[in-house]
Image (tube, rainbow, N blue to C red; front, side):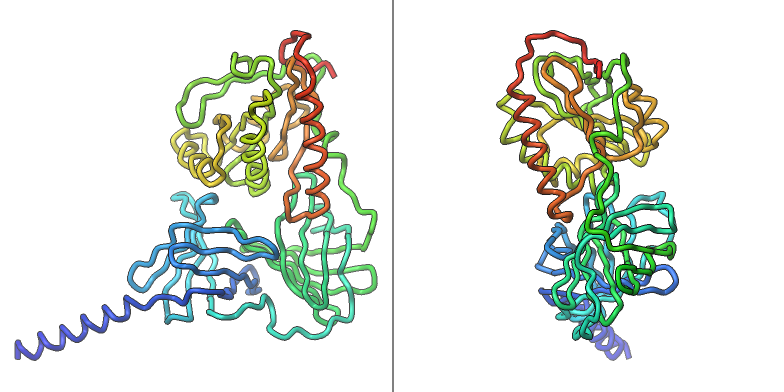
Amino acid sequence: MCTRLSTIGFLLLVGLTVRAQVKPQAGIWRGVFTLAGGHTAPFNFELAGKAAYLLNGAERFDLKNVVQRGDSIFLPVDVYNTVLAAKIVDAQTLVGVFKSLDPQSQGAGVPFRAEFGKRYRFVEQPATPTVSMHGKWDIAIDENVKLIGVFDQRGSKLTGTFLSTGGDLRYYEGSVQGDEFSLSAFDGSNPQLFTGKISGNELTGSFINRRQVRLLKGTRNAKASLPDAYGITTMKAGVPFTFTFPDAFTGKPVSLSDPKYKGKVVIVTTLGSWCHNCMDEAAFLSPWYKANKQRGIEIIGLAFEAKNDPAFAKARLETVKNRYQIDYDILFAGIADTKHASEVLPALSEMSVYPTTIYVKRNGEVAKVHTGYSGPATGQYYEEFVKEFKAEMDQLLNESASVESSRVTNK
C-alpha cells in the first residue's frame, strides 16, 4: 500500500513538474483586454526570453526582466510600476490581468486573454473600407475635452494619435471597415479603445478605458491646431523664478541659484514617473543633454509624484533614471497636485500640465515656457518641435552671460 501511494505521488509530482516547465512560445502574441461595459480592446506584444515588447503602430516598447514562476508569467512595466500577470494555459495561450504594483492601488486589475501567432489587431481579414479617416480631425470627448486626431489610413489599416495642450495620447493602431473605425493603444500604463462610425466629414463613437465609456464626436478639419504651446503658461512679472528642492536620490538641497548653474543655459522641466508625455520628453532630453552638455547647458527635472514620500519617489525615479539613462539632476518637488505645484512654483501663471518646461538664459532670465510635450507618435508635430527646440537652444547657448541678473523674468 505504501509503495503504491509513493508511486502515484511520484507520478503526480512528475506531471506537475512537466506542466510547470511549459513555456509560452517566443514570438508575436495578440491579447484582448476586457474594459468598461464589456468592451474588448486588442493589443499586440512579442515575447523574447526574458524580454518582451509592447507593439503599437511604429513603436516597440521594451519590457525587461520577464519572469516565469511555475505555470505563471509576469511581464513588468518598470517605468509605470505595473505588470501583466498571466497563467500559462498552454504554450500558445495566456489568461491573466493587468494591474498596478502600488500597494495602495485598488481594484482587481484589467483581465485579458492572449494567443500566440496572431499578428492582426482587430480582425484578421478586415472588410473593405467605404470611408477614409486619413488626416486631421477636431475631436471632443463628452463635449468638454478637446483633442486633435491625426490619422494615417492605408487601405483598411489605421494608425495615429490624439493631441491635447498637455501632449499626445501616444501610438494608436487599428482599422477601418466599411464606415466603422476601431483604434486601441497599450503602452503599459492604461489600455484604451476608440470606436465609432464616419459619415462624410463627421464621426461619432466612444472612448473606452477600464472604468468608463465616454461619448466621442469629431469633425474633419485640415487646419485643426492647438493653442501656442509657448503661450499657455507664462511668467508673472516681478516674481523671481527660484526654487530649492531635495535631490531625489541623495536628499541634498538643490537650488537654481547654485554655482553649478551660474552662467549656463538651464532647462527646468516638471515631470512625474506616472506621466507618459514626461517619459517621452525624457527619452528625447537625455541623449540630447549628453551630446550638448559641454556647450554650457544644464537640465533640472522637478518631479511631482503620486505620494509625498521621498522613499517612494526615489524608487520610482531611479527606475526612470535607469530606463532613460538620465545624467541630469532630478529633484523631488512633492506630490503631483496642481495646487501644490502652483504653490511651490509661484513665478508661473499656472502649473496644470506635465511636462511644463522653462528655458532659462545664461544671465538668469526666463526666455520661454513650453507647455506639454508632443512625442514621436505625433509625426509632423514632433518633428516641428525638435526643429524649434534645437534652434532655440542654439540661440540661447550662443548668447553671452555678460549681463548679471538674478533668476527673474521681466517679460
